[in-house]
Image (tube, rainbow, N blue to C red):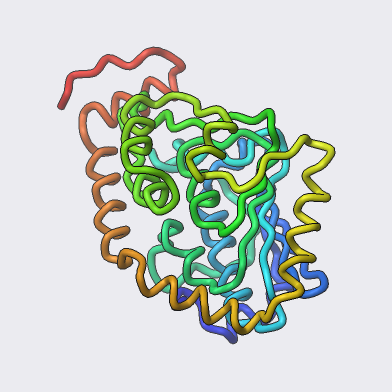
Length: 272
């Protein structure tokens, strides 16, 4: 974790977050995506805010675990496609820019604290960084999971790498190249989801996991997760995949796919 220094993140509760709700309670850091009006799409500043909060959790040994949730009926729609084409929404966040590129695909693995995703809405595209990155995923039983990138002239390069850590390779590739919605029960079967609950049961299920984790040594867990990080693919692989995404965006099909999405029409592919 080298995007922010320990001193920079120590005043987290004095900061203004534009797109992230942050609450610290009884050794748990609760992070809630708070951009429901934009389907919690990953605005560049939201990515910075997530990185800032995770650095705080990493450096603070009084944080024993992290719970990630989201406002609205879309947990996360993935990358902000408008931002990809240079239309970036202004905000009042006071979170400083990180000292480097934020690669969400590896960020969660370096917190070294148990991370729980409380998924109460549909997840698409880059939203799967959160599910693949968290150690435990508790999902509502009526939600959908989709990878529509290929329908936009793009490809989920980094998401593919993240999913390959928790799902069988053949299923991941099939999902990436066909771009369909995966039922939550199938996500459980293939290892993307840990538990499925009805809407009225999900808070209790998250609470049960928190109480179970409280019985275990925070330092032993921290060192165990750090050792796990050392056997994962290196950050250089995520950088390569990020560069491949930029190359795809710049292709003719990439530009056409984003234009068609913006104009709400079917794309006309050329294969270029």
